[in-house]
Length: 241
Ligand SMILES: [Zn+2]
Image (tube, rainbow, N blue to C red; front, side, top):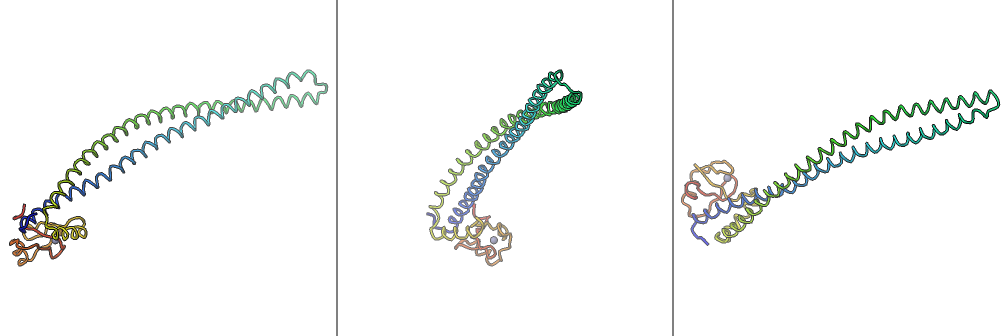
């Protein structure tokens, strides 16, 4: 543990610097998880687009198959009705049967026209699906690559964080316990900054002037001083490195 005020201030200044770096690293690491989750969500969106395109294609194919089956049924019915024509006795019944056959043929013809349209829809849906699949695979590779980079960068940051935490622990041991308590309390109230350098009589954290009398006392460094404006522990930047 160091005793004299100048050394105490030097130790605190170094501790503050390290703790600020630790804070930045912790924030960056919290963002890593968010980034990974956001990349996963992005990929999921492309997967859903492929699923939707596939569902559209299947819907068109089912509609085509249903129409095709109905056309077959109508063709059978038309053939049977035509075969029966020869057995019809009265002209009236014959005319009625012809009319019925004609209507079935019209229905079949309408269905066949619809089927041509559905075939075009199927073709378009297949094209869209292929595009979406290609896009998904490209994006999947891209996103995996990005995730790898993010994880690799995070691993470096984690190591750096551990190193700094260890270093901070070593420095804390050098600080006089009561001063450390004061520093911790001020840091908590001061948005993570407990110590401020003063350069040219200006507090470098709150940017306010330290009155001449107080600045002269600060330069003497015979006791710990507090910024009269932001209440942080201050040290003269020119004297403390
Ligand atoms: Zn200040």
